[in-house]
Length: 205
Image (cartoon, rainbow, N blue to C red; front, top):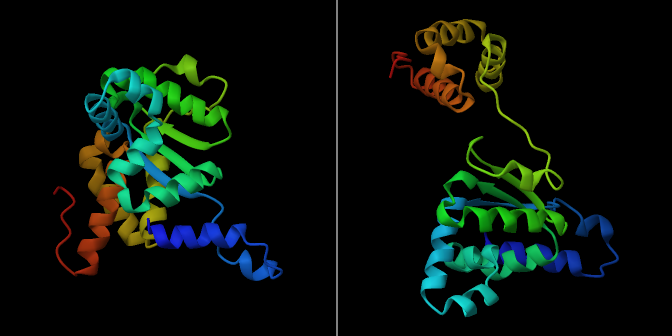
């Protein structure tokens, strides 16, 4: 994320300009920020190791620590946007929080309860669902059935019937893996890439 650009947008929004149409032109309502929980845990652990635990805990805000450590140039603008409730937090992999998982869960819930926009992901067995009952809508991803696979293929490569059928025939050989949306999306993009370069299409790779 470009810190000067984000700062400029925030300044523009805070301006009392009479030209409302110009001020609102193409300004996103929220800025998405992806925070991988495994990296966040390492940042917090390093912070605590660098000073006394009491002082570290008293001063720390997990998002602020992450911005300063991993997104240094953008950190001031990100913290300003956070204060204005203009960030969309995406915490990826709660189950990878290690010994800090419980604290990170509490922090994520606190953000949601204080009017921040938050999305969090985890393996089903890797988080405490009871903590998220009130502040979050919990969704579970299910394996793709045959019709879902066909729809995903069409969404990625379009309505080229020959290509769609060829991919469907190809994924038959690894049907169990193709129930995973990410795997099937990668297969579709690889197929499209090979077709674009007019090379032989080998989905088994």
